[in-house]
Length: 303
Image 1 (tube, rainbow, N blue to C red):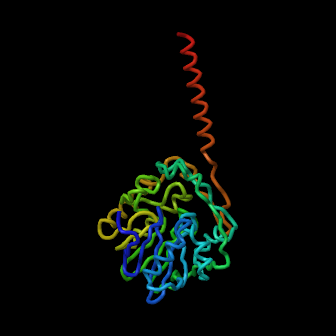
Image 2 (cartoon, rainbow, N blue to C red):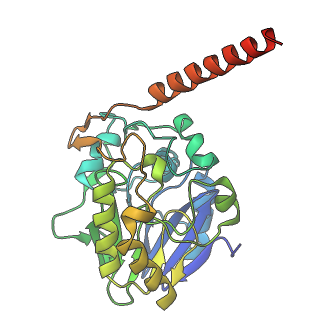
Image 3 (tube, helix red, strand yellow):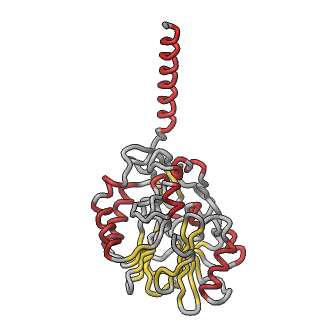
């Protein structure tokens, strides 16, 4: 496992908060925070920023790739200390203003303990509307010269990624992962392998596939994701191309709540959900178990 925190590109520091990455981007004497990690990491983030920037000044802004619990957990605590703007895509706004929760996760997809436990994960919303600002239409990133944001939905409606053209540095949030996030073992060891978004929280697989295709077309030199280690160079780009070309085969679940029908959302949040197959599966398992038990009792009685 590599050093944590670690400078992964010029002026870009990555800090892993247990299982999710936070990024610090230095711009001259100021800096910007990208995502806020899990709850309970306020002081870790502040100390890391002070060492990286060289002073205790707050960031010029906080930019969110999206508002899932593991990316905004420490946001309320940070805003108690820092009176700074928070930028997010307009389609993420309802999850940051108390208006709407995210769709339920799907524990049936992806395999692994992280997926199985996903029903226990918070879905929000939180309310930071006093600090919240929309990202502009021009795709420039406030306070970050040379960076642009790209709308990369699928994992959630307003997901964004950040790209710096001069050195082709890509901060992909959860549009891509460089570890199998559904597996507790892979997360613990940070095993390097390229995947799409964490399956259990992905609500639109067609949009997710389209987003991976757009990011692949950028031909990044450095790929930094919300989960897993940063990866650079030709081997990474080859893995990206393979993922994009075989996304449906490799990533899209054959069964699950959102496998074929997405959750629908608008600027007010979640508006429609496909039916949950889990109760039907549970009922089927219960019936099968009952039949098996009855058959076993019958055999025992006939001896």
